[in-house]
Length: 322
Length: 259
Picture 1 (cartoon, rainbow over the protein chains, first blue to last red):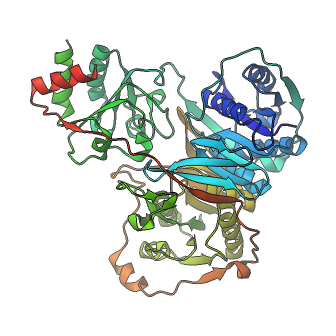
Picture 2: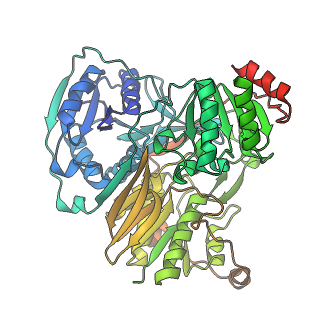
Picture 3: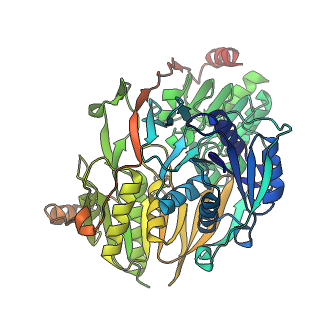
């Protein structure tokens, strides 16, 4: 058995970085709360191959679960598979990435197993006897501290930044194949189609990012942002609204369902400052905000406030940099 | 085809634009906070009302716990729902598992339904905790992070679901729990409607039925997850500088500072 089990999310590009961060966090926690071993749950196509990689990243044991019903991620069959895995391999703590997968299947599993559940944790602290799950709350002014008073299994999803992913090493753990039985009643939800952008840009490591929001107004105006980006060797980022409007591709979305970035400089253009976007840029070292609304909430977190029309401000900045 | 929807509505802390001092020591300074109708629950309510407007049926709204400032059930009546029920918990120390158990029992008591609609958020952050835990207890299909309802048939609902780097289209068998995870531009067709003046007059004193945990046959065994306290985060001090967009020198100085 494993004392701490980590759910490993993977796709065609491999294991997600956040899953590796969760694994690294579990490694830090091993030894506390009376638990020692770190297991990894790898479900779906290529599970056995991915399990071998997970061992190299520090898991003591990786459970590979392959089944025809797990070919695509869907909440019910995945919850059923995890419940069966936990029955065979009990754990005290299950950590999942706080993604649209982890936050979907984690609470579902908690409901099925009557387990305690905390989502979107920024940190897990342990004093040697009890774990405290910390969630960033109240406009980022405070952490709420949660504890598992029930004493049974706790299911926790963790946000980007929970720990630094470990580099691949030799690893001394073992990969174990696990068989599950997923009945027809677990297969009532179906995936019609998935439209996902392939990742070709790396916003996470960009030093300078120019973000555009609904206020940019149209796709042509995004080209102004691109001119500025080329002068600054910057990447283009965007809010969900700008992505939904079709002005910029999905892979550039920053925020709740996009990426979290930590650039040295973030230039926010036509971004009002909705919390779903702001959570993704909070750690930028410097922020310049350009908006024609003088009361836009984004200014509260900006180091430089420019109230004006982007069509005149951005070309001026381009000129100054030429 | 008529569709019967049940909406879960929550009154939550309003955490927009908070002034410093929300947490003092390890306690919450409740006086510094106001409450509001959970905005994504309001989106869920709007979806239910739009389905009813289009194809008929009934909208019932459930809420757990006593009113603090904002009576979400009365607000729902002002927007034209058919029925509301307040679920009275045996204790105020409810965790999500306890809320989900009470809601699942209340939904069963209401009888047959096609959809349960709720927002993705809890008071803070965003997660699908409550909706998924209710779905688990009802044993029905769930779709979380719902962006929009694409198609509602006699026995299934097709939804667009927002995911990292894109979206997916998921078909759930009815009855199902749909967890709304969408935030809206003001001109979006999914934007929640306002309270209607006529209904405000008519429903101001309408009685709101209450169901207790005992009536629902729910025995809660104590919260699993408890709040152990709060930890204030030192506010990042930001000296915002106003930069005149008309002044080339000011813009140049700013660029020199940041680059």
